[in-house]
Amino acid sequence: MKKNDEFILNIEDMSVNGEGIGRYEGMTFFVKDALIGDLARVGVTKMKKTYGYARLIEVVEPSPDRVEPVCAFSRRCGGCQLQALSYDKQLEFKQRLVENDLRRIGGFTEIPMESIVGMHDPYHYRNKAQLPIGTDRDGHIVTGFYAGRSHRIVPNRDCALGVPVNKTILDIVIGFMERCGISAYDETTGQGLVRHVLIRYGFRTEEIMVCLILNGEDLPCAGELIRELAALPGMTSITVNVNKERGNVILGTGTRVLWGQGYISDQISGIRFRISPESFYQVNPVQTEVLYRLAVDYADLGGTETVWDLYCGIGTISLFLAGEAGHIYGVEEVPQAVEDARKNAEENEITNVEFFEGKAEEIFPAFYSENTGRPDVVVVDPPRKGCDGKLLSAILTTAPERVVYVSCDPATLARDLQILCAGGYRLKRVRPVDNFFQTVHVETVALLCK
Ligand code: SAH
Image (cartoon, rainbow, N blue to C red; front, side, top):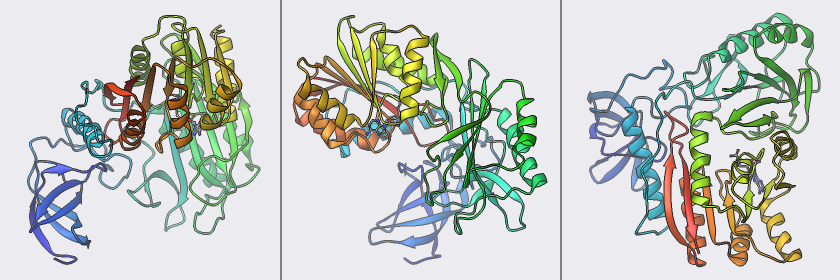
């Protein structure tokens, strides 16, 4: 078997990245854009020892679960991997993904899986868009999303997962750059000014934030851009963020307000949150409420407990838990997010929470080496790389009754749950929540008891 060989492949499974998987002459092949249930003509693109990659040439017999993608760019764009799969099957895929990781990586045999929570409208759910700005071959300024596994921009100002106002804003920003001769950043040379545009929209409040990420201190002719953006209904915050570092990190440190205030507000379940450009905020506000309610349910509080919300961002889960706990401590490493969290507690008149700025794996163990007492419940909601080993050890040492793990990556969730279970905890409940329709990503909430 070698590059460019063609054959017909029966797609029997799907990988964690959403590629179709089939076996041919004893080898496993991964095929982008092929779906489970497809009979497909494929061409080999790369061979490894026991597996290979192939491209989809033609769907010979389509899977019964194929649907017409809403977005014209869905195959080229790296953002959505599952648009051609019916929504029910996407949910099945994610349920299986979480269960498989817990089995394979976590070594769990009996898994108390509860069925995944989906949502009705699987488009236009994202409250945040973060788009790279670049230049095409003809010298035109473009924006859109990166093609899969690359930094090539697939031009698209109207992503089907985002809100309609994104397009209006991007048209204004690109029009302004063209008129005023403002350059787009070029990753290969490190030259050019505008790197990214970050847009946030408050689903409940209809407030809008636009932040331009610059490879420089100043935006020439900013007044002209401000005039146009500020005229949009709901515009609340126009800022610039400076990032002169090479590399993939989008936001730099330091954000400056050009117009309005430095943050927008949104509301979940009657709690109002302020969100700065640098703070994390869940991208799907409807499912976020489901996710947080599940975390509160799993925490099973009686009104007196000491609870830690580690990796707390702007304090969302802390404030959700506050009404049912004795005292909450939140820990977050991004200073702006901690500032937002404190303001959020104040504005919602919630007084039994306290936020610490710093790394969870440092603050939490230090607290219990300096203070007596122990936590009753620990909630963790780490980024994709999961919890730091030092934090997991500290959880085992302080031995809370319950640990609620909110995860955006089933593989690191499985790894961390295995460590906690080896240290004396038992996995009691697991439930995936689909916050990221059309993509392979999934949130999961898990409950561990001592
Ligand atoms: N629970 C929040 C945020 C979850 S995202 C919410 O639902 O909105 C994960 C958060 O962890 C981010 O805000 C990130 O800045 C923060 N973070 C990442 N590594 C950290 C660490 N080692 N210690 C503390 N916070 C960290």
